[in-house]
Image (cartoon, rainbow, N blue to C red; front, side):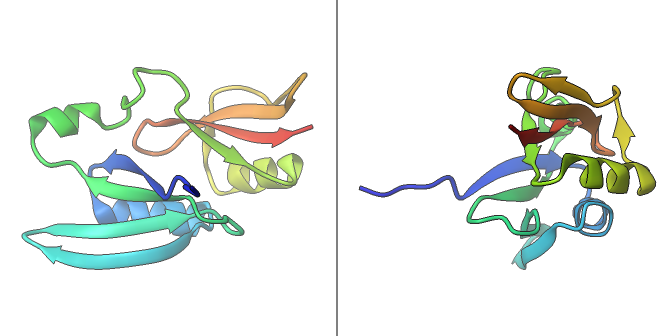
Length: 129
């Protein structure tokens, strides 16, 4: 049997604002943007060079989902953007106005820094050793 993780849903307040941030600020690729009717869309984005996994940008539908925006993982870092060049991408993200919660640090497993997307989701930028 062969399986892989295709996508992970990320609840956002607005499709277009999320697409703009991920594609213009982070340079992710817009893989799909399909109108499903009734105000819903199937929107997949992925980091450049990604091999299979993507993020499904899902517009919040109702108060319960709206309350989860930015806190889908209970305040923990829930998303991990792996890079082949930490310093390059850290500098590029800073130049694009991405908010880092801390200075970059070296850990036994690699270089890492925690950042937030504009919707409050906590991410690690990480380059493994």
